[in-house]
Length: 228
Length: 228
Image (cartoon, rainbow over all chains, first blue to last red; front, side, top):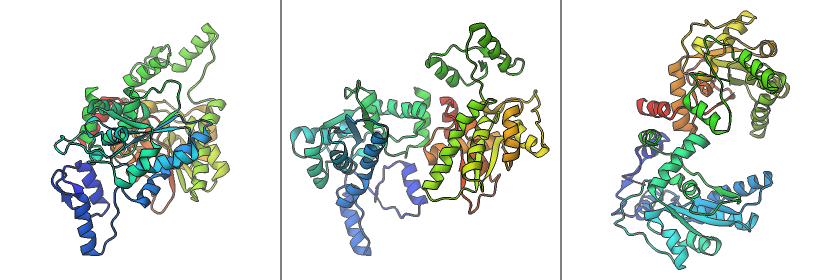
């Protein structure tokens, strides 16, 4: 169940892996309701995208890897910044970091117009994005509000939330390609963008960022490489 | 000491790291002679690009990593394909693979117009590329002939050489960006191109390829992403 305005490459890659795609209107319909109905009708198992203990545990293995790799390098983590939409990857990583590198601060990174985690963490309760907000370039990070379960985990564990503009994301995508030699989609580049744009003071600190997701349209990557 | 027709990004990245660059004409001058003269004049240490035991040993650590990572995955390597110009990386990897995975065949991959290793391995002695050959898109793989030391190592250890067209390299660069999410320069994509273009029968086999080098011009990567 994918929004009809998802990038063509994401729809195509999903089809190529053999999936049947049910598209929906992100602004008018609920993905969760559509998926629940389909699961009931077909006797299928629902695999939610974030607000679920198994999903959080699975995504949390990225946090285990961050802590292990920092340890192998003899580094003590000061901060971990996670690309965040519904908060599942963040919650999993926050649990792992709390256990293995409790001195480190864990932060969400979000598009400025979809900064529901930043505002929710500041307010101490879940806030929503304005449903009329035009989509950010970060198509993977457009969830309307933090998940219920993910926020219950994230609220006590996180240091705070960072927000970046779409243009800062574009710069981070180009930096990732030019310097890291990695192809990253907009939603996967927000944590890197937060560092590059100085949203957190990283001077002299050891900071891990997730670069999560590479479903960027060829045409967009080409355009960014040519513009900058 | 870099050819004056090296990609701008490679010249720029080298300058940005603080180097003084001496440019030379690849078709008329000898890089080795220029560098030797400079080293003598300035009392500098010459670091050759391939025909040297220390360079070969250093590049061979890539072969150690290939063998170790295959072992960790429980895989038995059948073939290893290495992007090849002067033969230093190939020689280092061939020594490591001969020691740690002796069942595996090691192959060079080269641009079709600069296939001196393929022809030299077939002939049993070093062959030269025609000095009038126009440059391949693989700017890093334009050495005129296999190194003396590298060929002495490679000749008994290699299974053979593979050659790919510039267009097959272009396809491999696009595949690497789209599917592997890696930015690879033309010379670093020849081994992948050899597999994708069917130059070696890899059906049912475990094959390692090097993707070595990411100094691709933004404009070229953008052009390839848009064309394909």
